[in-house]
Length: 373
Ligand SMILES: Cc1ncc(COP(=O)(O)O)c(C=O)c1O
Image (cartoon, rainbow, N blue to C red; front, side):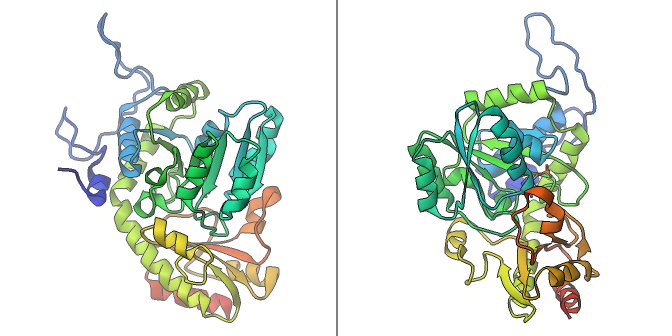
């Protein structure tokens, strides 16, 4: 029997412990493991290479994204860096104009120091991507929906453009999660996650992941480099993230339903000039999102008609939405991104980002209404 997605989410990597019969996955904190007898190879040897709790999480992540191999990292940025660090002097990559500010920081500050050529392109514009790739590329990076403008890129098209140039295609799937979108099935070679967000789901565990379509030399090279840089996820963080996987589909369903109601309310409010949420028919990426996503996610951003001052006042004026960075937890969060992002920001001054949580949607709407009054 091949289990459906929600069944996989509950069971992949979370099988009862064969040693004790414990139904909940055990947490192994040991940094070192007894060597196998002469002539046999060690299954585990040292926590920086691999450990049983983190291996369970990787099994779950690979199953949920439909990849052959997953690697868990200490943070989302450690996972981003692990891919970008494979680029060498003289190679080129394409990065989206709208993407997580840390990714932009890495490609702006770190890669040029190594002689890697970075082209910034609106990846929702396929002609612009084709033109950028014409000079030859090694890596095409996408983030869809993107942080914080919620741009939607056609992942299947991007995969075929990258492959036509012999390049790898990597997609940051943090906002959508595999519940809503599976980039590997659309042709991506690598999926990246900040598991700090929806996988963890409770704003209490930092982590990152890469899932590879193929368990090939490239995946092995990144695993070997993770051992050298020590960027592996700690066991307790792996355990919490594995717990998050099990309720991910159920949480995403409520996140998405709440976000739909919030987006519709904001779209009809006179203080809001623009709502960026791909579920609205007015969103430029709606048709592509409807094709490649199961639902439209619970991240949205708005631009205030009253500009920068109105945006700051809105972000500071809510009572249920907490004024804080990050996303994907049970609690709703609100943030003025240009203030939070600092030097590398591209966020419009009037933009406020919302992570819609699991509270009652009527309460969330009443809170936003009073903050906009
Ligand atoms: C889309 C996206 N990618 C990557 C990251 C980086 O993840 P982390 O904070 O876990 O390093 C974030 C963090 O907000 C993000 O939103």
